[in-house]
Image (cartoon, rainbow, N blue to C red; front, side, top):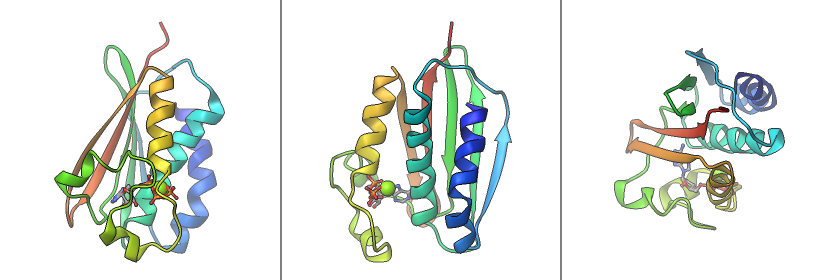
Length: 147
Ligand code: ATP
Ligand code: MG
């Protein structure tokens, strides 16, 4: 996962810098998983792009890789707009966008997270969201460790 993260950090750094934001990268414990590199990069890129898009300038996006007994864990944590509880279950639906965010962010189709969820499930993984409006959002991706 570390190799993938390093590549995606590189690919997203221009967008990050355009908002005067920074990454805080913490490789607590690297993880080896079985998967499709391009698809895994797509998962990481989408989550990081969201963290940047739905945050104010000059905030930090924390990127963390860790493991538990069964999973490699990739966490993206922002200090952005946050998502209301009632919306959290809906953001993985195709074309769903939270209104508050839509007015702030010009582009976007609302497809990113539905694709992310699909790709994570294709890797037998899962995604967990915690969020607080006005404080920020954490997205944790769990991908089964290679046995
Ligand atoms: P795109 O298809 O370009 O990714 P999108 O970013 O709008 O468009 P999703 O990535 O699927 O679509 O996200 C759906 C909605 O969930 C977003 O429009 C936004 O309202 C909300 N969202 C996603 N990530 C975050 C985040 N980190 N902080 C706050 N809101 C978020
Ligand atoms: Mg998106």
